[in-house]
Length: 117
Length: 116
Image 1: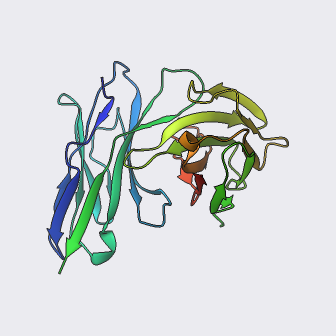
Image 2: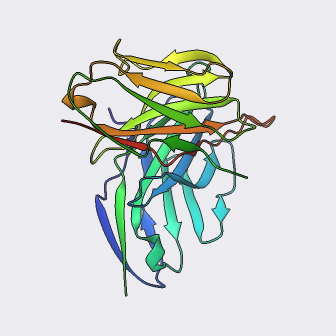
C-alpha cells in the first residue's frame, strides 16, 4: 500500500488565487512528521513546511499552510495568493519515527502546479 | 550559510562504466542521506550516514552501489558497471536532529545521470 498518496497529478490555479494540494498518508506510528517540498524544473527539492504528528495547530510558513487532519490522515498544502514562481512539482513526504535510526523520508508521486495569468 | 552542494550536476556515461558523485552537506549537519528519483516519481531513499557511519541502506542499493562519508563531512556515491536502469536524478540531503526531536532534511540540486 502507498504510504503517501497524492491524487492530483496536475493542478492549475490563476495568479493571486489560493490552491490546495492534497496528500493522504498511511502509518501505524504514533510519532511521525509530514513535509512538503517544492521541486522546480532545475531539480532541487526546496523545503516548504513541516507538521509534527503531535502538533495541535496547523503549521504555517508565509503563504504556505498545512491543513492537518489527523483522524483522516491527510496533510493538504494550501498556497495562498499564488505567484507565477510557484509553478513547480510539489511533493508530500512523511518521516516515520519508529523505524530505526534513519529519519528517511517517504515521498508521494507529486503534483505539478501551473500558475496562470 | 551555504546549502547542500552536489557535483557534477549532470553526467552522461556509457553502460558498463563507473561513475562517482559527490555531496557536500551543510557544514553543521551530522546526518546525510542519498535518494534516487526516476522520471515521474518522488525520491526514494538509498542510504543514510550519521557522521562517518553508514547506518542504513535500502534494498534499492545493489552491490554495484557504494557510498562513503570518510571524515563525516562530504560523501561520495559510486555506481560500478552502470546499467541503463541507473539513469535517474541522485539527490543528497543533510540534516541535524534538534533537541525537540525535529529534523528537516535540506536537499542539494541533484546529479542527473544518463546511462547510454
